[in-house]
Amino acid sequence: MKTIYILWIRQIIRFWRSKPRLFGSLGQPLLFLLAFGFGFGPVFAQAGRGNYLSFLAPGVICQTIIFTSIFSGIEIIWDRQFGFLKETLVAPVSRLSIMAGRTLGGSTVAVFQGVIAFCLSLLVGFCPVNWWTVPLAFLIMIMTSLLFTAVGTAIASVMSDFHGFQIIMNLLVMPLYFLSGALFPLDNLPPVMKTITRLNPLTYCVDGLRGVLLGAGVFSLGFDLLVIFSVLMFFLFLGSYLFSKIQI
Amino acid sequence: MSSIISVSNLVKKYKNVIAVDDITFTVERGEVFAFLGPNGAGKTTTIKVLTTLLFPTSGQVAINGYNPTTQQDLVRKSFGIVFQDPSLDDELTAWENLDFHGVLYGMDKATRHKRMNDLLEIVQLSDKKKLLVKTFSGGMKRRLEIARGLIHHPLIYFLDEPTIGLDPQTRNQIWNYIIALNKMEGTTVFFTTHYLEEAERYSHRLAIIDHGKIVACGDLAYLKDLTQSEHLEEAFLKLTGHEIREESAGTGDNIRMRLRARR
Ligand SMILES: Nc1ncnc2c1ncn2[C@@H]1O[C@H](COP(=O)(O)OP(=O)(O)O)[C@@H](O)[C@H]1O
Ligand SMILES: [Mg+2]
Image 1 (spheres, each protein chain N blue to C red):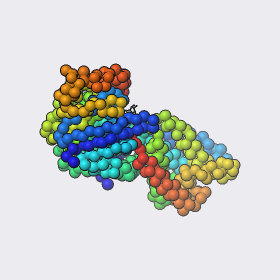
Image 2 (cartoon, each protein chain N blue to C red):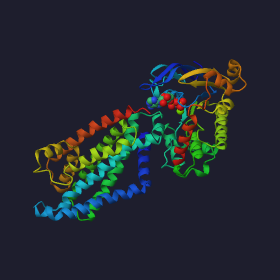
Image 3 (cartoon, each protein chain N blue to C red):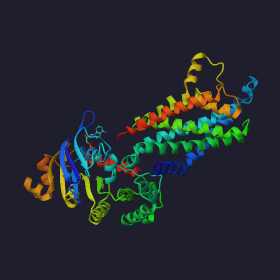
Image 4 (spheres, chains in turn cyan, red):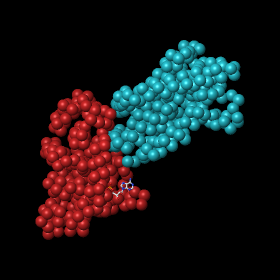
């Protein structure tokens, strides 16, 4: 327990001390909300789809969470490169508790950023239909952050240096995000696109959040939660397994 | 069973390199034991196997009587280590780095804080404990790592080239701490080096390792006797057929020094 706690608090301290990350976490969602929200708003309204900013806000919250969580998971590569990982790996503690502490730390940071994105979207005019659904939204945010921190951990466990990092960002994270329905509605898509979005776990996070906050989900909330939960379990196991196999 | 480290016929292969090739040696309790060899000799690989970071390809290893492959936690509780490359968290303070270590080793707050203060005193970093490690010089980081490895009162202390890339004055200072700790707490010290004079001056016994093999092992008098040499340098030359520095040891050192300076 102590191990998990100390690894968790380390992530929080590191995040808190790194001011660029802190401010960067404000900038990106704000930019998306303003540029896209107000940029595409009129077109969206003309097409009879209602308020684009409201539609977009859950997508931007998810975006913030997925970027931060995958990045937190991938921080293992930094720790490996700068040697700190060895310090934890020779300690008399299980790899599982190391993994648990890191994952919780990364996910806490990501949820924190998600909440900031949520507050920013409130500032620019977003409003949930029902305030009592906010705790449920919080739950989805937590699950999303755990899921993608575990994905990051799994990736980082098999990558020994930074070279693959940019590739992962461009070939995995960006497509996951753009093909998730975060930016556009999922109905009336060409069949290929439709299939891809249906296979993307982030789709269900965005849809779940949109369903909860706006009552405008494509799938039922139960189905969204089921998918997120299953994928989460899968990646927690995969991440723990790959992490336990790390050799220095 | 009295030897605190015992290694027999240890082999470690990476994909197509035999890094450690059938080595056998023991280290006794309270001893200062040196592994002397040029870059690429297999020193770090041996330490990684002894400290549970790598599994041996074949052979037997016992650390404090435990097997590093099957009894990892018991082995891990028995030793402290200073790695060849830096392993501190630069974004944390000196104190936080030490505290993190104490928690990982299951020490309660009062015990670990007392120990941390004592060790900071010894390595003369007490007044710097609230500073972020990234503001430290190479020598200060090393001293902090040396203190960190001892927080949990290990029986065995592994030091992988503890003074590499440091200036002579800092090197001396660091050795004074290590020797003092060996005397005060009876900690067994296992260190690797490619500096002849360090092995000569500080070890009770040493093993000369070259191309993954131990070419000789014993105390200084024995090695000189064996080779009919005046100095360890001469003995090394006779045993390995080359000087310790000839195989681009200098370049490796320079690169590491530059890397260290960048941090
Ligand atoms: N991870 C690795 N994969 C492949 N070969 C390695 C690896 N680590 C070390 N080696 C090789 O094993 C040999 C011994 O290396 P090492 O144990 O680091 O030597 P030393 O610490 O004495 O300088 C060298 O030839 C080195 O290139
Ligand atoms: Mg080495």
